[in-house]
Image 1 (cartoon, rainbow, N blue to C red):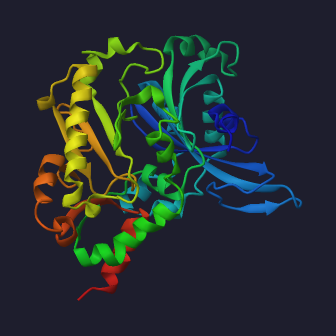
Image 2 (tube, rainbow, N blue to C red; image 1 turned 60 degrees about the vertical axis):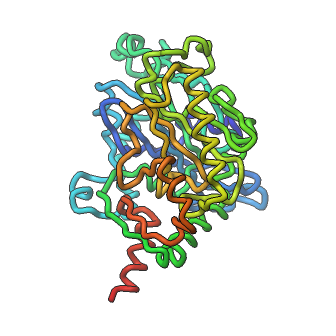
Length: 381
């Protein structure tokens, strides 16, 4: 899919586009966009259904995720077409069973509202991820009474994932709760590892190649090392716009209280914590030392104010390390985060992460949770 076709306005303007609300808070909203496109050649998108009009043209249904940074009074409108009812969530029903829940009238109102904005590309991974600044456009609104209000709101940030994979959509679904998994080495090798391999083999991680080769998101790059890169994580939403803000203004910026950076390994084949051995200790030490030094030189934040950790399970299966300010507690819960300093010590013990049971929190209704649930049922004593 071309960058122009991935523009949010291009997707929102498709005649059959429908919008469903996944998660909405006072500051953020995640919307599921579903639409059909006519293509002359197959693509790698998330194909739900397809009909062939002739030998050269195929109609495909594609789903995309639109993540918005919003202000409180958008909440009711953007949340007006929920993919799950509150009753569904309370009962813990799987999100996949209810994806057809849809209110056309609510969808049309959300579409009308969003089409009052223009979307300016700010960063593009070259694959399904792209980032925009949305600005209200006077004279474009069908809701004339809201025009002055829209002008006062100003801009907001948008992340678009298009096409979105079933795994990405599953992660964005309303939470049905979580379970604690006690993953033994046997369970990992027989259940989790094959699942990880299917994700790697699917090609859904191709966007990472553009990052580590510094072909995309150059404005977010903090350090390009022979073995890894250090980037500004997209979860650091309060960071000054990297494209338009001079780097000297990043030093001691008020937003550093929310500091969130990401170190991504250039070597392929390391999918997660379980793959680490003693031979990776120099890599981990280098990522921690050089990453902390880069953060100090660019932002003025001392190393004793930064936690450096690894997720298990990670969000994506290409090895990466998180850097966050101590005040920022996003993603560092004890059942998921593993401090790199502790990991280095543990790796001094032979095959530590291949031999130990690891306990972690897993969102209900995800593919991996379903696979593990079936595995545990099959192997119940």
